[in-house]
Image 1: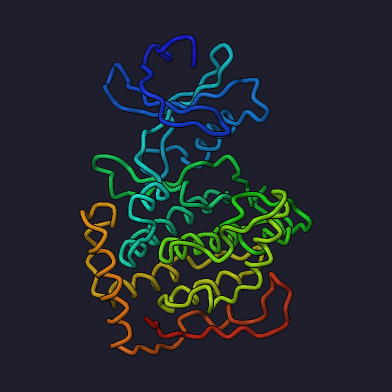
Image 2: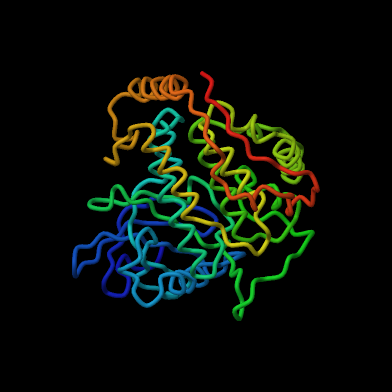
Length: 351
């Protein structure tokens, strides 16, 4: 804890909200405006101090008009006070991981589709600022508070990296150590390839499948070391076919994975194409964009009933559509350097 409960004669520390590798985080109140904020505090002698880097990165991402940027928390103040680095920023609500746990570890298709649109938009904005995130996971997406309670925020840019330098894309490099969270990392990240925009996009899909199914095939693996566990996750992830991973899900999910897995290292994802694909599914399912997320519902039974109704609806419709992914994305898998032609197929949902 810092020596004083008042920071910069403005922010009064409140209760401790949590802690992590960076240090501790507290709620606080701006005593001049009564605005609630969050305060991150780290010891300047910590092994890898990162708050100053994080503060500067937020400044770069938010640009000159931070109030116009949706879904990225604003920073209000940074200082080094005696033995601590202190960062004051927007106070947000719970993470998607917290809400997932509160929803019996399963989200309905409607909730996931509403999240997908915002999550792709957040990553698209980050990429537009010249950065890749490199640690996509449910813990790093938070819900806002009050009037922003339906807004999804992207946080934690401690592992983020510029992929554009002096107007040029960074070079492709091999034999890199895994950066990020192994559960959601792209296959190429496990292999040791330098990450780019395509890897953020692939990791997003693993998060969505996790939400819809409750788990991923490479969870719960045991090993004698962290590196050993990473190797096992890599093996299972590489050997799990997309069709099997997405079994029981609408065809948009395997189509998305085929698309992002075939992006070239420097290639810009077609964010609008991908969002439209899921928006069309949302319309086809007769959903209403009312932001009625699962965690706002009183009973888990209603979520299960909705899932069953959705599966029946898709089966009854017996929809077989032409692949919506552009032909040029179906060619050789450049990232895995395989010459086999990958044809995107559409699969029916089976209950």
